[in-house]
Image (cartoon, rainbow, N blue to C red; front, side, top):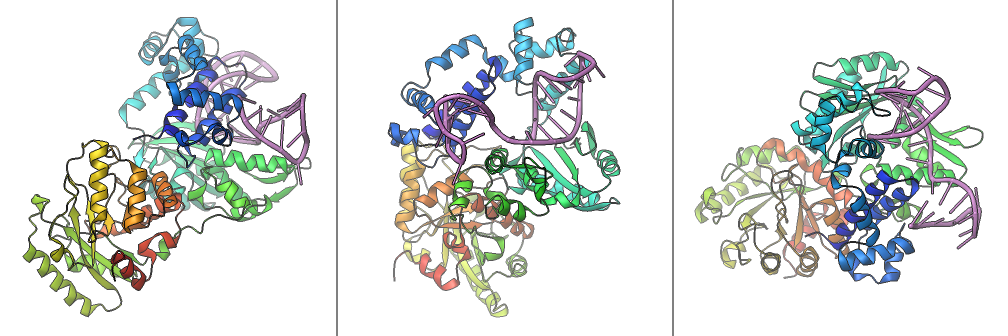
Length: 574
DNA sequence: GCCGTTTTCGGCCCGACTGTTTTCAGTCG
């Protein structure tokens, strides 16, 4: 269900890539890249904009606006077709190999007629690349290794896996003599939903021994680069880990640099240049005198650039710079502000911990309230019955008497059937404190049927939260086809919260959808969907998604006081 | 190709690492 923005961004990116391959002028492809990113991240649907509206998108000028219009109407534009005829798709595909950029791709194509990965691998194997200018036997070896590595692993991992690897490396790095400080940065710190490589930063006056230790850890399989201040390795599990070592005095500037995102860094460096300053990983300097202005903390650097501190989760160049300048950055919701988890399971259905164990574990989170929401009977394999559900409720009320500090809510996770109906009649549903309704079957309905199904479920006065709204599983199952804007509008209208399922392979809704839904006035429920005690810790990943979607605590029902939450759960009824 | 407190031309983020064309281009983040 891509928006036209995404289609246009993809086409412009392809054009930028092709330009970079044939390019004389390196700035032209960059202009198209920037425009593509601005369009992809633009909140409004392109098809709804007139020509002036398209021109108003940052980095879109007259020429690109005309091409955008052409893409919207025909799917392409003449200049793109010309380049496609000139540069085979396989040549662009070769630039996906690490270390193999547009220039090298063009050389092998022009000199040897190679226009695809398979041919490139064959040529490298036969030793036919080494005669070319800038190519050697070493280059051939790198190509073969890179292609082999790309085929062996899927490339990206879920955030919990990356967080685990980062934690294990950091623990060992902090134990290396001379390391004053070490932490993770990069997309992991920005809480991106999947992670391609783990970026680590360490502060030390003696980088040599730190690099020796890092490249020598026993789970390091391959050393991609080994420098005085920067090294890259691949772990045995196939994940790339980069380490940068800097002096403690430059911690803040280095943290900004290494956290990214790259587009965010480019923007603030441009701001620095306009102020007669220079920003790099060592600090903020006067451009002419090289006098140091700020470096020690991120806050110092941002302040001296005339900006408030910007949360890592917002640093994507999706409007946060403009908002910061205007003093309109959101106070994003934090883990500490969460008062409860509203979607969890026990061993009454498919959880692996008992009701008592889950409640006891939740209490250590210092939540004000906690909902147990086991599966409803229509998910037949869970063998739920009215009697079992009512017995659980009785047991929960007993547990409540023993733990007065945390209010226990009795709920259920309903199944949205193909027509939008749910388990149980209204009379039974009214007995629950909260209900989450989710799609667990019939994933392949048409967009129209799926959208109608979802909206009908939200119009049910006894449905409070839509669980994992798109049902995607990262790397395993695509999202269902929905008219999301229609769903968001209906959620806001009916007073139904949309879930941010914090479980790391779901993260559903995802960040950009959250941000769009917020424009419609939707409320959100950040839940762990925990099926075991340890899963309750996944709340942090849901918070990451919420922050990346620019949510404040007012947007998140689980951050509200209990009385306000209860009012919301009545869905407008008295 | 875009943009403007250097505003219609002349810039465009910045530095580390690799390989190799021993002074720098290509690539990456």
